Image 1 (spheres, rainbow, N blue to C red):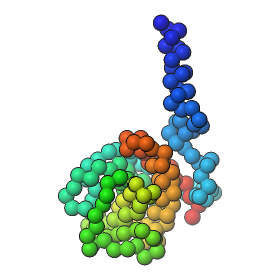
Image 2: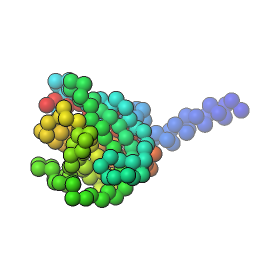
Image 3: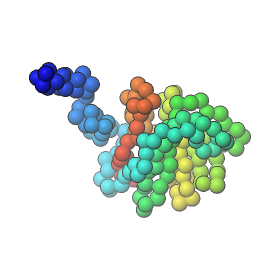
Amino acid sequence: MKASVCLLVPLACALLFGGCSREEAAGGNDAAENTDLPAAAGGRRLVLERGNVWIMGIPGFGVNAIPALAGEYSAEGGRRFRVWLTREVLYFDSAWTPWPDLVETLSRETSGGTLAVRPLNGVWTVVFLFGGDFNTEEQAGIMRLCGPRLTRFVSRSNRMSDTSFPAIIEYDS
């Protein structure tokens, strides 16, 4: 019996992770293939402090039960911003306005800060909440930086439960 179990475990791993690099099998660390983000020569990074928690309800859309993956990143200086990923269709009232320099991005001011919404790949949408310690230029930079990385993560997910946020997003400027 032990011999058959010993053979089944490697076979199951080969079937589950066949064609994946060790990094991908361990959680999707794709720094080596990351061609659209600059190298982190300055050592700056966004770090996922809390996240990969499925919740019901996204701020900015009234009382709702929109299913979403929630997370919180820390940026330089210990400043934090929150993110949500959802596959649900979102409806926007007149409080939402186009972001000045980001195509397909809407934003609105709330008591908690600036909410911004961007589509990722035609299926997923990301919602950001920035507190007052981020200026508009920093908010736009973070959204530009996160977009490609989040798109890669959600594109690898066949089911909502397979989705996660990248633990670290490195950048230079």
